[in-house]
Image (cartoon, rainbow, N blue to C red):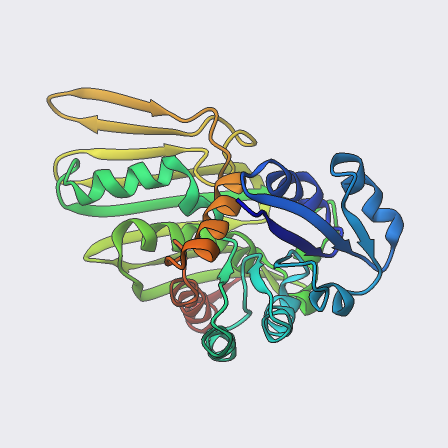
Length: 324
């Protein structure tokens, strides 16, 4: 099997800690090059993958004939721009979430994907984790009956890092675009429906959201969620049905926040717990992307699915009441 040769735009800490190792470990993939304006930042990547080349220009990397696919972990507001440039240069692209800042931005992304015939996707890694695949299956199989209510909580505190891009309005900062994509997209993935009938309350700081509480309907189930970048770290998701309840621990950062588990609570069967201690959704994501390239099969998280989440975020931002 000829490996997919990957290039990364930018030597970000997230790429260094998660996606570069995933590419290095994934079957059928090789970390071929990193583009950075500061080539010193490429050295840690080369310590892991000695054959990885350092390139001093994003444009040079996307036009490199020895690169097949490009991973884009740049600040949020640059994702769509460089995704389109890489597609036009003949490269498959996997861009970090959110792949676009607004729902309307997907028009150009979809057009570029369709015109080139290449794979273009948002790096929405949770759909590649068996915890979420199992949850989707259990809900579809009726393990908890009809889903009546969904609750989500996801928070962390980065108030002590004002220079972080998540704390920069002009770079697409704020909690909704950073972690709201998980609270919303995960429910949409499991239920196969969009978030509708939305209401919300938001607290802003320096022009970006640091707390958002939002409600709505997903496939007939009521939905209630909050995300924050100014609260004690927490993450949990519950699907409450007529015949049982599903609770996910560490649903978004397994093995970082805690152990990934699916707890199935049923009246007659008690508690059934499934654990996934060894799953690496980043490696799974890279391998799924390579499979789509080689086999021409649909990637598990399409641009259209990503657009649905961004449209919901756009709506939340537009209808929300401001909190003091």
